[in-house]
Image 1 (cartoon, chains in turn orange, brown):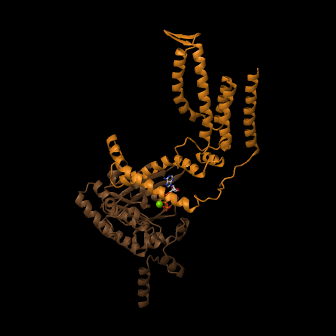
Image 2: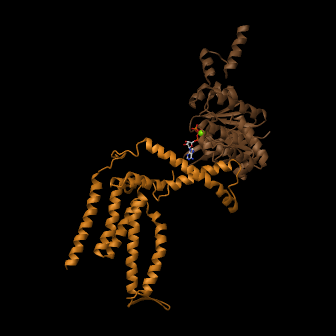
Image 3: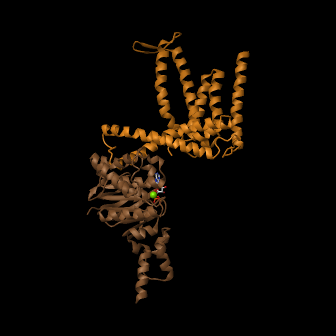
Amino acid sequence: MKSISLYQDKNTVIHRIDPLSKILYILVAIIVPFLLASQIASAAFILVSIIILLMGKSLKRTVPMLGFSGLILITVVIIQGIFRPDNVTPALVLGSVVFYKEGLLFALGISLNVINILMSFSILVLTTKPSDMVETFVRMGLSPKLGYVLSSVFQIIPQMTETMATITDAQRSRGMETEGNLTTRVKAFFPLISPVVMNSLITTKERAIALEVRGFDSKQKKTFLTEVKKTRSEKVIKIVLAAVLILSLIGRVLIWLR
Amino acid sequence: MSNIEIKDMYFSYTENEPVLNGINLTLDSRTTAIIGQNGAGKTTFVKLLKGLLKPTHGQIFWDGKDISQMTVAQLAKYIGLVFQNPNDQIFKGKVIDEVMFGPINIGMSQEDALDHARKALSIVGLAGTEDENPYDMGLSDRKMIAIASILAMDTDVVIFDEPTIAQDYKAKEKIKQIIRQLKSDGKMVLTIIHDMDFVAECFERTIVFAKGNVLLDGPTAEVFAQKEKLTQAYLEPPHVTQLCNRLGYQQTFLTVEDFVAYVKRTLKK
Ligand SMILES: Nc1ncnc2c1ncn2[C@@H]1O[C@H](COP(=O)(O)OP(=O)(O)OP(=O)(O)O)[C@@H](O)[C@H]1O
Ligand SMILES: [Mg+2]
């Protein structure tokens, strides 16, 4: 079934990594540059994220996201570059418009941060199956019910689209015009609404029953269908990430002590 | 007499997974059964005839006209399809609305549509359920509603996708009756079906699909005489045919009546 999530099923090392490690990576990628107050650290993490995404064959799919945030970042660069209060050193003169060094550097910092956050989240979102992600959350203590709601969110839109396609087929195969110009299509949309809603309600009821007969509401502690594979490399990844975090903490303290 | 001509038709849902590989067929006024293993591509084939799917290669002609030039809705006037799964077909909250939906869309007046719908419902044995909600009815009744809503449209071609699903003996007899009636009204009847005894009793022509190809096509008795090829398609002939074959009769018997008549004749001699 199609899904609204950005995840694409590919068989790469990155796809196989435990979602928990990816979440940990996001935390490290965000916290470390913040602790060290270092733009170089941000840039480094961006580079690492790019490499990981390349390995996961998913780098291209970040382009639309980058494009969208790029638009916003450009406005940040323009506004900060020209109007930031502590602007003193002119860096670039375009006709009557002057960009200042302080503002541009500040905007660069923001841009690096935003791109860094975006890229590290991309790794999680683009290479992790939504259901695996939810399962990880449930393992970490999220209630299975909430987990179910979360994973339904990923399914509900594709399911609706499928129901709509089915009903459209039922309608046009009995002579209702659904193809053609905009007016026809708009007209064809309204008769869809009530069956789709009714259908969803019925499916929901049936699903509730199906879940209930399989003990969804049982008070027993739930086990998981899949076991987390505790491989050496997974451990190494987590330890490295933790080490980076601790080292940067120490670094921060050292900076303070100086 | 109208016909459907399929020329060199290929189809696949996803790349590299061909579902139909080069189908060439002409469908005519003979009642025709389409049989074949699950997943052979039968439903896909009839959805292509309905225009719901588009061939990846090849053409389909309805009365000489290429159907890719018509919308599904336009084609609906001529070709009616009872879906395999009634849940995919029924979407109204009232039986009568469901059955009148098609007739009204293809241009019948309100009165004509109501008239046709009432008749169709009584043909399938559901007269009196007009105001019920189809969602509250069982699968067998829903299948009958699906049938009625196509019958009510009075199309030249009627295609059934496994009409006997979930039906008891009495309902099956009713469906046989409906098919015979359609035939005598001069309609083209095409039926996908897994019940070989039913095929033997009702259809003049049988087409066997196997892995996206037409494996056998011909008069039903000839098709059921081809034991090896049927086995190849994981099908078995009707029970009487098998019985008589094991008993060593050379002739292919399709129905119990045929065989009984034959035995009586030979005994008299
Ligand atoms: N919507 C779809 N998307 C992708 N593949 C599909 C789709 N519908 C059917 N298929 C595949 O196409 C093949 C043919 O399916 P089809 O439904 O035409 O078989 P069938 O002969 O009608 O089988 P059955 O006797 O079970 O109804 C199957 O392998 C099926 O898995
Ligand atoms: Mg089928």
